[in-house]
Image 1 (cartoon, rainbow, N blue to C red):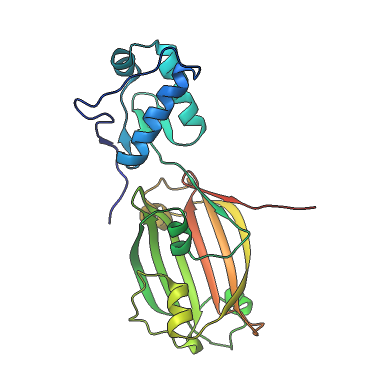
Image 2: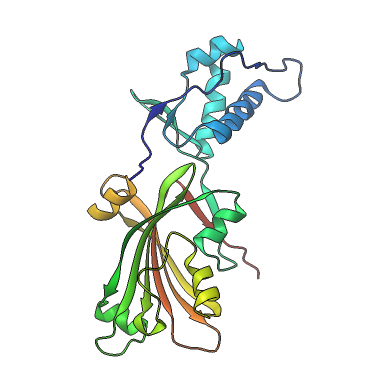
Length: 258
């Protein structure tokens, strides 16, 4: 399984023309931040180690304070992080998901212009615990098809551990290709007309298994989203999904009106 690892990668290519406009009204630190951020987005995956402050001072002929201010701005935006004795590395630009419209992970990534990456961890029939069975309004002893997947994009994989539970009566075959969009499959192949979902979001600590799968530390903070999904004309949910997201790579937003 691919994991984001610290790796050395050149932020600037050999012979690449780089300069700051000393007479520009745009502050030097802001110009430098833009140059660094542009190159991070185009060529630096999560985990890439960035040049030290002295190297940037020598390359651009600016003060160390200018370099530090550019890096501090990127740190505040969640693009990079600085750790004592470990250096400065890319942690990515966190994605923001608008909760005003229900979308699948695949749809959200396409809207962000990202290439979806998926690893199917497990697919099999499952007897859900009583609390979940009650939420899904299953018959006594009712089973679900449990689908567990790691999902992410080309800059950060894995980003989220998704566990979907579908009632056995829905008839979804366990040998389907679950590396693609589950919602597209349900709508196009199984005639499920998706209406809406009821979501709850909370912060939690990663379990040992979640930490192992996501490549993070045990007990590290994660964002957990749980949703019951409904189809048109039916008051009984057809899906329960639990997503465990890396907190440093994902943000949820919502427009609120009074």
